[in-house]
Image (cartoon, rainbow, N blue to C red; front, side, top):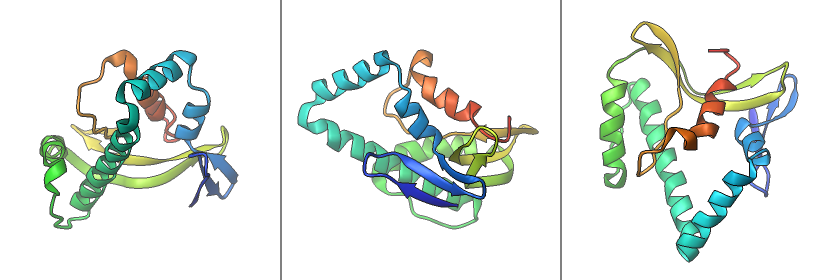
Length: 159
């Protein structure tokens, strides 16, 4: 599927059923005011560093996702030093994963007309499991993970 990125940051997928917004784009557009306020406050606290921090976090996530994908393809990829802490933690989990069904695969829901890219769909302790890897520097409270939970729930595989 072709991915179309908008200047606003939104993303759409060209699917066989038409042009569908990404789950992330939908979540951003429907974010409750409380979440928007929390984000604005974070930007205020971090001032001119906010965009740099956001950019570094996004890049860190991309690198970790590429390392995970390479591992399941059997490729030997060197881990950059700045993400080694995350990679060492991820490897503990990855070692327990069984058969991989899909990795970094674009998927869409034809009935509800949204799309996204799943991180990993694999067997974990004998159960087909959808993984969504996060690379935050600090542990998140459960109530802060609303979007992550919705991303998993939106999976068209219905897991």
